[in-house]
Image 1 (cartoon, one colour):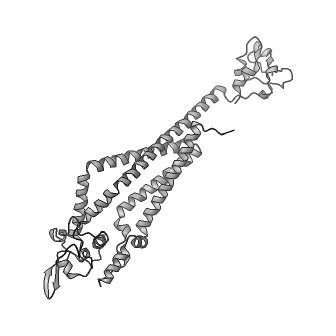
Image 2: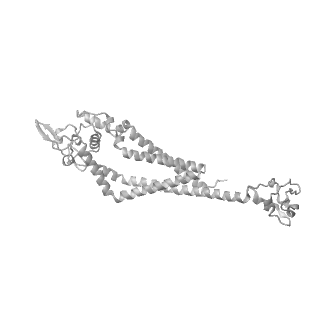
Image 3: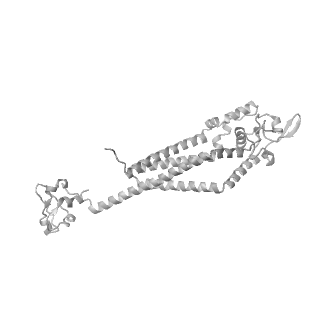
Length: 355
């Protein structure tokens, strides 16, 4: 016989499979974010900071240890957001799985409500980003300019902001926030612009980090697109990268949002199903008052006639009723109240009261 998939079984199975997948996604997100945030040696190696160190060494520039930058600290806010998201998805997934398998209504309703709140929050964030994109870009560029203005010191700087800027400009092959003149126009207060070339002190136009060769004096004095990265500002490069992958990012976001909505609906459906079953069970137990008829399974359709005798004459009479070859059947008072003056079809009447 081919097993059939009822509506309840299909809902529970689909819910469990999708929730397990979501839990795995949360665990992967958590692990990856923790690695980026705390294992800076691995991230520095794979994100190219070691190559930046080698470029500085080849140019005889003072090199700081790779741990000086710590990519995880550079992406601190992003890492924390992904860590919190990973933990949330993992915990919610475990709650949903346990609640479904063990039919725990409290866990299921908590899971559905919290996940619904997450979906609403995500929609609000998407709407805000779509409506105030210009302001967000302004906040980002202002923050980057402020970092150059007050913190950037040059190619030999060892503070976190300087290391970030030198690494970004080297890796992305860009210069400044919007254009290479930002270092002089803002200006960068801690950046030493003057440099001695041919016994003449001259002002640098760009930092050494914007040059393809990190000790090229001609490049910092008279930069061009062959010797430097003056053609592009770093913010535009990052923005172009995000735009190029916007289709993929939007697609992944929509898929995650749809899965979350399906899980919310299934969570409420399973919760309502369990609640309905519990209510119906309570109603049935209230009606039959836990009444069990001893040896009721012995009743057969060909042996279903009996006469209660004295039970009708005296409502309080507790004498057992005997019928043919059946053993004594003790009838509680609430059952005797349904008896009539004529013979009763015991099979039909007694079948109601069996659990």
